[in-house]
Amino acid sequence: MESSAGKNRILLLFAAILFSTGGAAIKLAALTGWQIASYRAGVAAVFLWLVLPAARRNWTWRTLAGGIVYAAMVVLFVLSNKLTTAANAILLQSTYPLYLLLLGPLFLKEKLRTIDVAVVAGVILGAAILFSGSEHVVASAPDPARGNIVALASGIAWALTIAAMRWLGKRNPQAESAGSVAIAGNAIAFVACLPLAIGGPAMHLPAAAVIAWLGLFQVGLGYVCLTRSIRHVPAVDAATLLLIEPVLNPVWAWLVHGEVPSGLALIGGAIIMSAAFAGSWWQARQA
Image 1 (cartoon, rainbow, N blue to C red):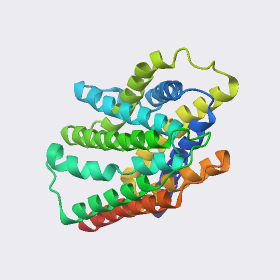
Image 2: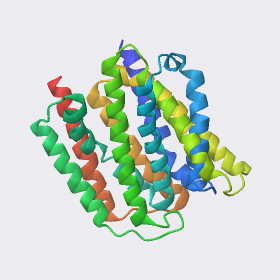
Image 3: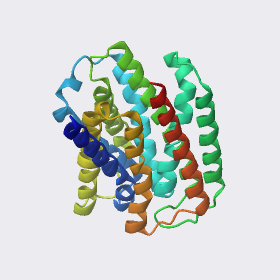
């Protein structure tokens, strides 16, 4: 049993590491954001369709609704990484607990607790500090101000995606609703972005390699590792391991592109992650 628990923790850690490579890889491809968003999603959709057979069944309009917000999340994340630093993109997306806590009482009939209010306050404070830091315009982050707003929108879309997956899971606990939403979402993102991708820079071998990495490994394999392990790892352990993604994401961007986040961005990000982790820790204690 302990060996199995250890393997699931390793799988979850591996998922977080794969997810963390997204920012640096997106910036590495000499393609437009629309091209990367479309092609990455297309590769990921095919991969997940092949390796998650249970997620191919029992699709409804609710699956497609969840897929739409998932598609918005992955597209916005790619576009934000093309505009702002990898650190800001991932840390501002990490504000999703704020919106998720607000969505819970509205759509999932979940009560808002005192600890939830504290988490919301922490996330708002962290995001405000992060936004107040002035980012220098560099080749890998040409429009930080606009990119920060897009990254914040990706956090909202991610919260909606999680809420949709939880809503679907409650309606049919036996279905692979999360996998179905991921497949549908990636397929929708591919189709929606394709018209804007056509006419961009020509595909070449280095860019194709980056797209393959993003679709097959960063999204595809990362998601498979996550779904295989998350159910078998305690909530606090899972929250701790998944923090590897926002920590490593800017590290890869620094190593590959020389991006150095501002001090205020790091302070704000630390507050956001601490608030999110505290919420997960408290929830696990009450379970």
